[in-house]
Image 1 (cartoon, rainbow, N blue to C red):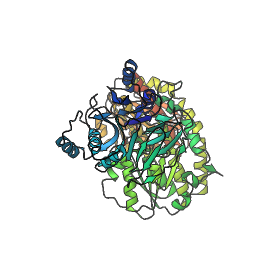
Image 2: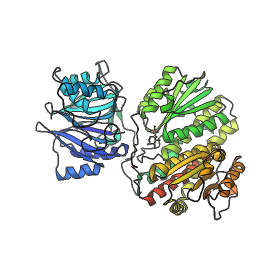
Image 3: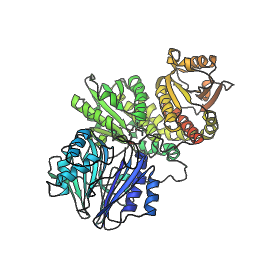
Image 4: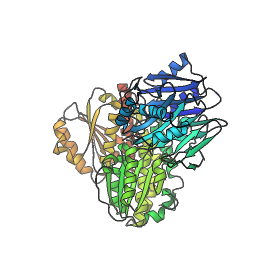
Length: 609
Ligand code: F1P
């Protein structure tokens, strides 16, 4: 959600902090701030708006100093404003940045106010800095005061604290919100994501839940939830290319759309042999975990949820296992039934989505036979807490609206279908056909990207529209849902998706010339039924945009524009039809002039509920 960066070094750290914030800005971006200790004084600069506003302010009035913390915010408690931006400061001594939500902040605020602390913001975070300040009256060290403070906090936090009276130390604490320590030469760093620190180090250790660490230039001492000293494994970053660069592209989203053939090729690498998907795609011991599975429960949010929705069609039809799919925030708060021999699958680009993580923890308590995550972030909470992980290898995704992560998730889920199918009712021929389809995906996606110019021209029609309807049937229904989500996320056009068989049960009432209808129509056994639905729209004066297989025999006319999509087999069709819908939302957003990579009110990694 928000982004955190901290540094303790012999050099000035403002530039490092700022660069880190820029790299994390895609996660949350309504305000940003930095606090640095210099000659025993705590100096802070905060700005409403993007990190660039903060950069300009620091250009005009630089903050020297070797110990500092910085934050980019996505508001939860308190409106986006300078006074609510982090870092928050207590009594000129303690500065704090925080990701997550402190659920008992109201009670703590009352207690601290009674103790004489004055609050300068509406945030939940501010209780942390006053609490630390208060605890320092009865504890000797910043570490001990933070340890005493976190015991009183309920909710999720990743936090970094500095004290101007102890100027060469950061104290960090993690519970429910990721934090990573970066190791440099005679300097150390902390961040909510290693991406922030790649310009200064490639050696990282992730804190575990409940850990508190004190970080100085020379040492990093980590303590577990009970205060025992622990070591956390240091690893070299696996990020091979620097995702912080847009290259030749105007937006990260466009770059990521175009990276899909490469991302798919990477995700397939080493996972198919002898025309079969290998169990090891899901981890070394995956065969043991997967062989008796008869039911799959998929949990995810947003785009990842749509990938799960598509997989349900495949798992039930081709793998012969039953499958439920549910939004994580619903699953975690309701009593659900668990079938015997059930596999719990979480899908998440970031691996840190709070609701998905909570759902996984609940499922483990419920006694699911095994747990698998389809995830793009190595070392993330979902990966660490699941029995198995399918590492997506899509490369860092910066655009808030997910694109390449979605298609790579679909590929991973198709592989899961093949493997579970092998342990259940799938024929060798079908396994072979799925493997072949997977292997031809990168080239087919490349072909589908060739529709870019045609779609850019089409996008003009949407510039003055306020609503749109997306229709699909079968496993294209989730694709229609994903198309609608993309359009609303980045162009702010209200878009809804319907399974086209549902048209006459309500949405037909909406059809008129101002409601464009987008139809995804591959050449499958549902095509004839879809054609009847198209006629229903046409008869009501609706304007249609039909993405159809060239053999599907749709003709463009006054009421319908047909965009021929390269011919593809049934296994890859949902993935291929996703591409033109991504391009459509991108071009509509361009015309509307919205912020494509950082749409209003959204955040990339939703680490709060
Ligand atoms: C889920 C998700 C994304 C969406 C946006 C907000 O994230 O809904 O699908 O694009 O970035 O979060 P994740 O669990 O897949 O990381």
